[in-house]
Image (cartoon, rainbow, N blue to C red; front, side, top):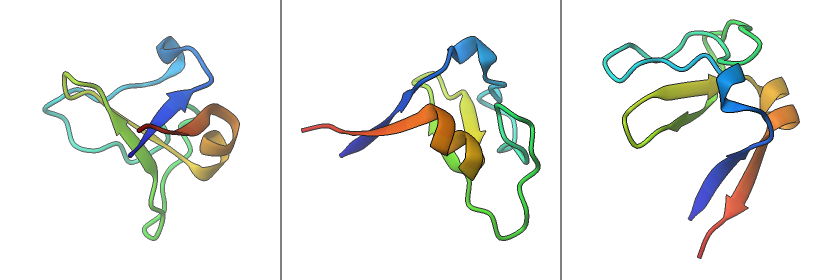
Length: 67
């Protein structure tokens, strides 16, 4: 199993609420996602969603393997 570990303050992320549609732009830099883009997304246990463009994934996200 893998999980995302953030390298930035979660207050810098524009989270979408539990009953809102998936974000159409990056939750950090606001870059719009294209039709063929597959953003990296994460959800809180309460259902809040954040999606990240490839540039922000490279800068702010670490994939961590969990046992």
